[in-house]
Image (cartoon, rainbow, N blue to C red; front, top):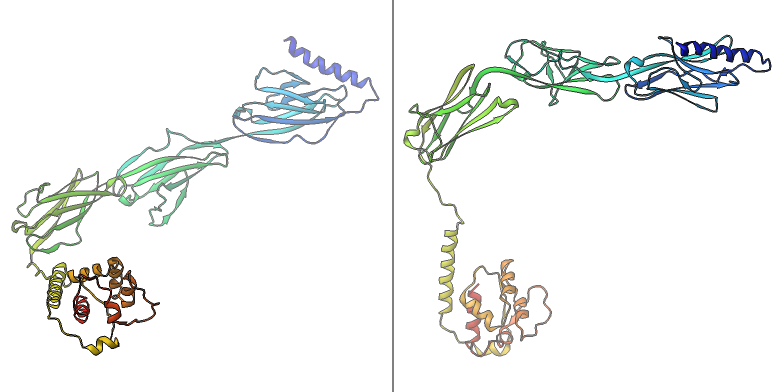
Length: 458
């Protein structure tokens, strides 16, 4: 009570002393008090600049509650979040820490002149959006064809805007069959819901104050099974491997199985393999496959693929009928043909190697004018390897030449270590007398016969 009485007395005494000093100039404000917009929980700071303050005092007040917060450098209110600072008795600052929504309102910077002078500013407290759990829909399960309404209740300052989107980024099908990417409003109404509406939706609340928030709501649609096949009539022969396939849609997830032409249920064994592949949200799309590893006579007839859940059962049939086994034909160029060709070439080489030696005319031998041109070759023989060995040649080099169109004899001459060949260019020809003189001593046969046998070995 004494503190409340002391405040007016303090202001009156200050005002009276200022009146007794006629030379003093009255204080004036440098500029109006700025309005503030602060996110809840942050610190708000009002700035009041007073020129020529002199003996006068500055006070901060809350206008709407008529509460004195500070006088000069003293905090009057018991609110521990309020503080006051100044700079050279000219700039005065009101600090409101850890702001709350209740701090929103008008604030006054006042100087105790006569008449009293003051300026006011508004403190706006903004609150990020928040989605309330209780009024907002949770995951929903509905029957196909019914109507559904999803709700999203959001709070915040300013009032947030609610937007609905599909989590996967698809479109939302409205009751008029229009498709839109998003819908604004606290409620999302879907008339005649179908399985295409199934999936997660996002309720997104935003008001320009970060962060934006969202909630995930899953819509689950129940419907009885549907089964269809792309090929209802399949021909096969005994011993053939075959895969039968059915497509099914159902939710809740169905139980699926196959039956044989004898109406027995198919199980996984050495003859059959059953598989189910799920796809789509909540596995409501599935592919049923039946692999027959080897078709038997008892497999010809109708196979059934069956899908059943709590809402019903549906099946479809595939007829397997007998066809003649296609004749097997051996492709040309197989390894068997190659082996046969090799045998023919090999026998030809043996025949060539066993030919009787023919005498060589003296004139041909002395003149050395006879020229032979090597062509490409396609086979190798024991004789060929023996020939290369006696010439001290590099077999890999000759083999590489034969692979790309056959050896040029110029290259063969270069491979002979003891023979100095001239530079090669184009198709080289050679003199058998000059070349065949490089045979090793143990390989002495008439020169024409040796050359002919070597040529025939290609």
